[in-house]
Image (cartoon, rainbow, N blue to C red; front, top):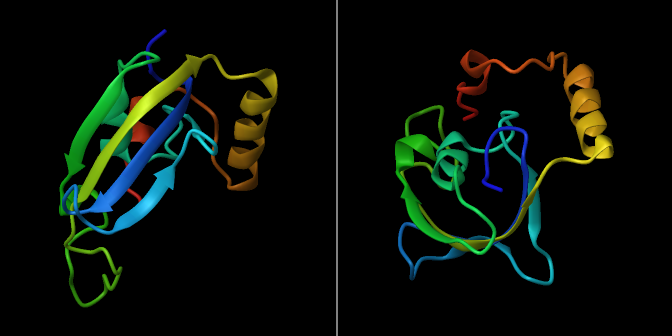
Length: 129
């Protein structure tokens, strides 16, 4: 099974600032892997695009440019990572369909946030800065 919309992937990864030697910003380890659902607009688009189509056992390495990560520094954008790229590497441990509980949680989250659950690519592509 490949990563695609409405699939759940269990991942281990390291996200570093700019380069493979950069400061570690986030890490998901085999002891504490990250489980994420794709195609529901909760994951940085560049991240989900880079992982789409991968299967369990696949490893990945990619860089997200600053404008797709936290934006470029400007007077409003004081995010500490503005202007920095993200270097990401990791491995896909598992790809599966979401459980009923996960789907329900997603629907509830959307309702709580005033979003409607519909499968519509136009709405998936907004950036969260």
